Amino acid sequence: MNVKIKNIWNKFKFLRSLKARIFIIVFLTGIIPSIVLRYGILENYEDRAVSLRTSDMQNQLNIIANHLITYNYLSDTSSEVISAELEQLSNLYDGRVMIVNSGLKVIKDTYGTSEGKTVITEAVIKCMKEGTGGSNYDYEYGYIEITTPIIETAAAPVANNGVPASAEKKNDVVRGVMLTSVSTESINTTLDILSRRALLLEILMLLAIFAIALVLSNVLMKPFERVAKAISEVKEGYKDEPISVPDYLETEHIVDAFNQLQNRMRVLDTSRQEFVANVSHELKTPITSVKVLADSLLAQEDVPAELYREFMVDIAEEIEREDKIINDLLSMVKMDRTVATMNVGVVDVNALTEIILKRLRPIARKRDIEVVFESRRAVTAEADEVKLTLIITNLVENAIKYNKEQGWVKVVLDADHQFFTLEIMDSGIGIPADSLEHIYERFYRVDKSHSREIGGTGLGLAITRNAVLMHRGSIKVSSTEGEGSTFTVKIPLNYVMT
Image 1: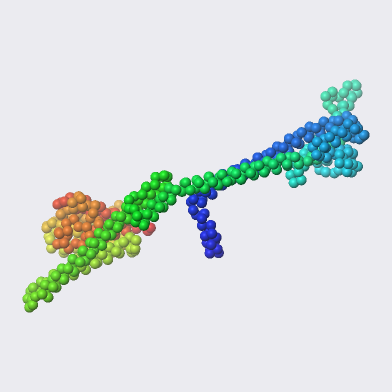
Image 2: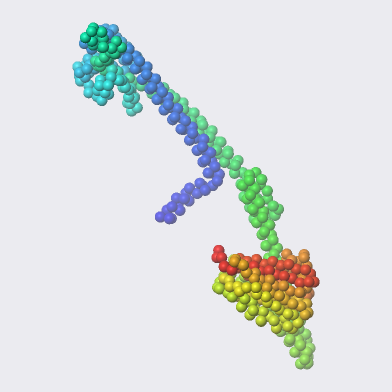
């Protein structure tokens, strides 16, 4: 069933085109009103013509009905005057007139076929009973049927004193009915002529509207086609500058969004190239050092054990450095928000921080740096314990590494009803103002020579920031060069799935 629907949809795939939809909308907007107008005018003409014909006939039939009473035609049908009037009326309107008496018998038929017959129809009986005329138009056979009462007006009876009971009241008596059928052939003929002319006009309008719809759909779609062409040229590499199609607000929004995307892709491409170059450089440097040390040993004969041991210590340090770079790179890949998974559980942040600081204090003591933990309240949060450990470890480790001799590191933990906050403050070398916006970039170092001595890879803060963002948190830094830095991490107490 789904395959059939898909095949049918593929046959009408052109309807997905905006140009086709604009054409259809404009075409239907033009043609539907013209069709409705055509039929409306023709039907209105027919109703109006039938109404006028009926009104005209009823006036003449009322006059003849009065003549029938005057000439006593219901009792004596020999009056040539009445017969002439009936024949003239019948010929004039291509119709038929039948005079029906109170006994429902036909006493006169202009066709001469129904005289002496009894007529029992709803219209005749109603007219005879109520004394009111009526009409009915038969659309199918094209004739108007009119019933006209033949009414005789008699004086009111006289009272005992010889004065009429009411000088104004008269008794109306229905003596018969005139049943008239009038042909509407002339109306239909005129209607056919009008219909043909309207159809011709409608065809001309259809062609004109078709052309207008075709032109409009092409004109209105030109800016979108230019957008598509410009994007295609960018994709093929023929142009690299921002595109501009300001014809419509919609095209302007599309172009702006594309230009922003293009700029973003340029930045990402530049970042990717720098990242590859940095990775190549960082991985190559320890290997080069190891090769130089190994070649030096191989080039010498009878190398003293002390020198051999010194070189081997240097080689081990370079290998350790290489291993750290590779591990950080693997962590960076795992921290990619598009592929990383979160193992969220309930974490006692106070206890976790204490454990991490306990592990790092021996490193700090080597440089006579004091590590202080200030917990302002107990904090329990929904978090990934491994990644949260990585965040705290990297920030505190950096605060120790880039500190001064006999300095200090202070970790403050606090929370409100939505977030918990970690502040890692130090008395270290600080970060220059022009470097603050770059510190989260991969392999970025404020002082490369000093970082090389310390052993940093330039990936720690990038990994930390990704881990914070995966918790839907934020990380900020404030620093004064030569005085120290403060990193503030803010993470929701409850992890929100997306």
